[in-house]
Length: 187
Image (cartoon, rainbow, N blue to C red; front, side, top):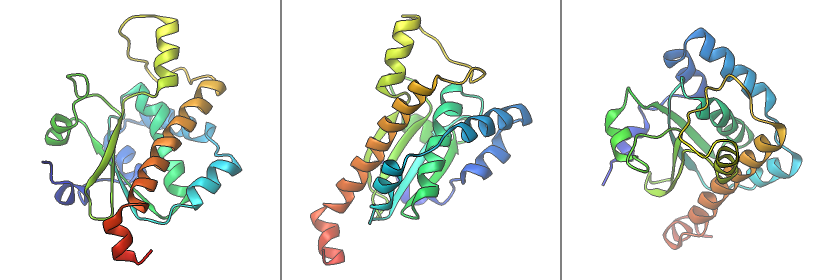
């Protein structure tokens, strides 16, 4: 069992993560992608409805093309509600976390872990959404690691954003409907 309570406080905010782990070129790519993301009114409404504290761990790499395309989405989610407490961890600087979060036999990024207010795991998701995997399969049917130099199409970006929002919302509802937490909060 991994001790997220001990680890969470070592996490970085989005800006701190990029400042500490990103080169100037990487930071520029992340900033350009961040500027391309916009939440719809309906998406903002979903996030505004979050009532439980939702700590979120994101294992990432500033060099990773998938992270460039997805992690700014998470920052937009966190900016839309004070309930999401988002912390970033560099994969190479936190080998213990990377080893614990291995997907398909590898230290894949980005990987997101949703926690309840007691820092217990609700679930994890990563490294790419279904829409992204479908796009990659259609384009190449082979191993690849996008560089982040070419931004995704608007259609793909919207699909990825919606899929990630669904994962954040799922974690929120899991915490919100927890009998133990409902008893604690009297709701």
